[in-house]
Image 1 (cartoon, rainbow, N blue to C red):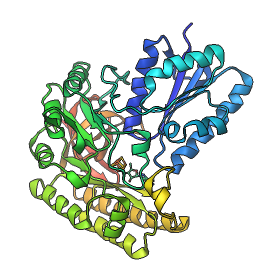
Image 2 (cartoon, rainbow, N blue to C red):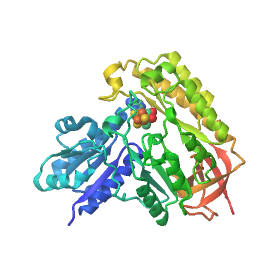
Image 3 (spheres, protein in one colour):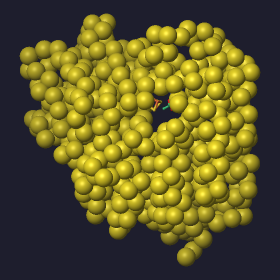
Image 4 (cartoon, rainbow, N blue to C red):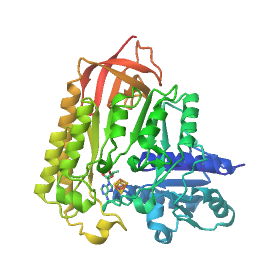
Length: 438
Ligand code: 5AD
Ligand code: SF4
């Protein structure tokens, strides 16, 4: 009987992708994957360290595993960014953990799990690598419409708030030929939408390939309906990438462009390497090239020493740009980062929360107004599966990445189809419509 492994994933799409890589590595070594935690000999948490909230959730799960371990043998593994960031300290303070493995050391996981299962040995592998891209490992994906491909790993930007350069190490790009082989094989397997992932895709370099060239090559693969990417950095947004988004029919007209803050003093403290004016100029360039290209962003509220006036600059920037959507976060000090070492986390928690709430309300009203302008229009939607709230409804996204929901009854749709939906109603996050026959 093979040992059964149950996995849970927290955090970003890169982590989802890594979980798929880990599944392949485990299967190759004779482990079986189970969806039922009760059946598992091994439970693995693939963790995130970007905000404290992500840590708290992991501690909750570890408490659960401690209770199970009193009843029966169980090997507990913690993978990913939290493992990498806290290293041995986590192993020492959480005796429930048997194995701790960082994002560049997954090839060692099967061996460490075997030692833990057979000899009750603790295992720690948190070396970062300058080369590891898991190039030859084909991820064990969940069948469906969407697939992700990591085209690069790590980050060299060292934004002062961000833990990623410490947990995922230095930037390295994967061979474009292996990426294209993988994308062609995804098309053959029936996947319709591919998202290319990297912490900062603008830095993608491999011989004479840059990211725009790679994106176009992926979008040119027959059988793929849509290609997306995340995320570019505003400081060095390549004109060729904007061109590709603007003209290529299968590259989605949506750019996720994290701004983080609207005050130049805060942007400088964050080490973002652009000013508010630079960002707004880039937005103008994008809109001039394609007025309908949707923009989304990430914003941090309450970064070290941020004043009310500085927050209001962020607020005004959001009003000015009119993003389609925004992820808005409270600043959360992360161990080892430059901000944790150099600046005081001195904005009171209640003030951070208040700023987040004000910005969320603003963004909701912007998104609602934008979505309402679509009522009466027809939009093209990639059918992805059942709606979250009802299996009587289909759900998909527009090119701009707006969620669309419609009744299944009387429609001829299947996941993977591109269909036309007439928009009847809108909320800040969703368009509701009816299916139009071809
Ligand atoms: N606190 C709050 N938000 C953070 N992010 C990254 N680090 C932190 C932090 N320490 C946010 C940024 C980034 C997104 C992925 O997470 O907005 O773009
Ligand atoms: Fe973090 Fe900045 Fe790198 Fe993004 S670009 S992963 S925010 S250091």
